[in-house]
Length: 224
Figure (spheres, rainbow, N blue to C red):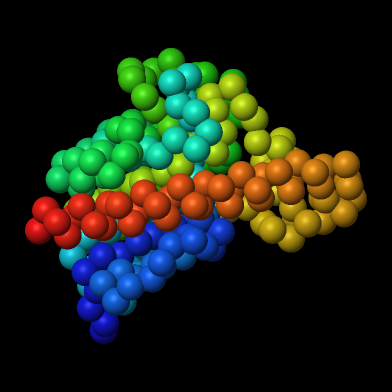
């Protein structure tokens, strides 16, 4: 078993593409969707025995005050059953010092449409965002009594929709099949520009995440 101070969890390789690695940090890809996220997080925690766990990745805005490219930190995570679970207060504070806006983060079983976003936002107060994995990561960390929070970069605003066909490319476990995405693009080439734009925006979000994480780690070390 290896020892690492900090375990970074991400769903997709693109989300951590610009993170600088160090001896103190282990980056683990869990896969997307709640089921894969929990299994991947549990395995990574067992393998690395970290001191704390932090999730990173992209998210969609639920509240109108969040814009593309905003760095947010989960103060509370709402799982698919509607249970509210607080994140580690000390980690949230450090993340805010690193530039993260505190939000309520809702984890859903599939990519949320603008209508679903409005319905979710209607039951929440303050800044809020939505993702697919954070509640599963939090559960894996909490089961092992490890402090946890998630830092996300907003990819789409509250009134924006990701390409609708992505929902049709979703597997039963909530993950997105890249094979189905590629097949759809080949059969519907007019969708390719939207995929190229999505890839560009994801790359920009990865840069925001890398800067935010670096600042978080620096401030965490400074705070002891």
